[in-house]
Amino acid sequence: MRMQSGKEQFTEEVKRMPAGQVRKKRKKSYASYFLILLGCLALLVLIMYMGMILYTWMTKSEETAAPAVVQEATEPAYTQEELDKLLAQARESAGAEAAQLREEELLDIIRTRLSEGTTTVETLRPLFKDELVIVSNGRFHFIPIREDLKHNGYSTDNLHILENGEYQYLENGQAITYKGIDVSKHQGKINWQQVADDGVEFAFIRLAYRGYGTGKLVEDEFFKENIKGANDAGIKVGVYIYSQAINEQEVLEEAAFVLDRIAPYKVECPVVFDVEKVSGDGRMNALSVEERTRLTAMFCQTIEDAGYKPMIYHNMEMGAMLLDLTQLENYEKWFAYYNQDMYYPYEYKLWQYSEKGSVRGISTEVDLNISFGPLWEE
Image (cartoon, rainbow, N blue to C red):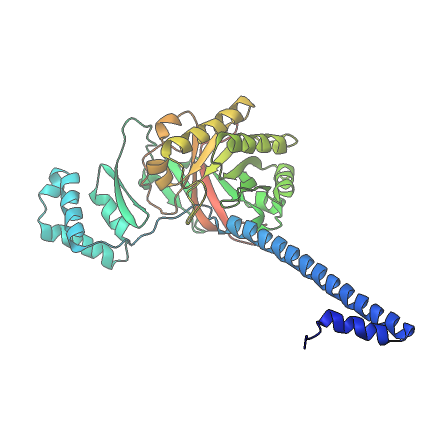
């Protein structure tokens, strides 16, 4: 005997029903279809909403995760054989004076510095007179100091640290440096008049950033408020863009974006190209030295052609290993380094020496800078 299908059973049932019941049955069926459709639409809206939240979170997280400057790791892992080679290299690099040292004496120097809390990289640096000792990707790198690049001539002996932790650089007993800060949306709302009253003479304001994963170019949400506030308070202003451009089209887009946004304001200090290596899979990390240098020069030239002074923000790893500074000698440098020793030999005009500063009018920690001479025309 053939079994009836569900559809056939339903048809037979409907045939036996009075007309009123049929209408009720159909209404109930239509209502069920409507509820199912409504549920599907609600699910679709929820998926779209969650997608928007996820995209926003990814954009924000990649922006906030990118540090002002990628700091060096201090303790790479080495085998005993590799450490023995480092010691031999240290004796050879340091010249005749070190050659006279017995191995025990050299080890004693290292042991003393490490036991005093000096990091491994800071312990090694004085032993290699002709090389920059840099930690990158979990390894020590020994980069010959280039004499064909301009050197800064700064001496740690002339560095003066005030009681509040602020830096000054002295010549003939007189401070030649100017006090400055750099800010972004992370500092929140700023009382710029109080900042000026605290002696801040210049400020670099983040104008925009490009996501290191998405590549999206975003204006800093506090840019307009910050640049207007600094202008009104009489503080000299420069701007910077955190770049993750990977081709000519993107770097020219960034330059055009900056020039359009600063047009209504007074910008007396440089326009800065912030070029950094990001921890993890930053889209700019994969560029070669030649590509990164070419894009940096292209941004700076575009800014200069528009009548502004360009500047390059970098740290030691970027300056010694990831940019060809011989191609960028014509542009002023902003160097980020958070130690008191003036170890980096090459020329720079602006020094970001702390990311944990305190300034009146700003409720959060703020980056502190000194410039070696004015950054503006006097």
